[in-house]
Image (cartoon, rainbow, N blue to C red; front, side, top):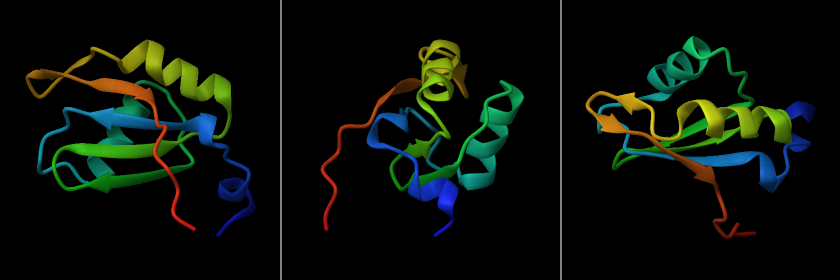
Length: 88
C-alpha cells in the first residue's frame, strides 16, 4: 500500500451511489477527472455504488459539492461521507 493511501483518513472516504450497474473503476475515475477532482483510490462494488478515497478533506468536500445530485446516466448521483465500519 502506498504512503498516500495510508494517510487517507475515514473523513476523506465518500460513498458514491446511483452508479450504473456496469460501472467499473475506469468509468468512475473518468467521471471524477471530468470534474477536475483528484482521487487517491476507487473501489467499485456490485450493485451500482463505489467508495472513493480522496487525498484530503477539502478534495472530498469539493466532490460532494460538485457531484451530489449530479445527473449521471439518467440518475442523480448520491455522494456522501462513508461511515462504514472497518473490519480488522
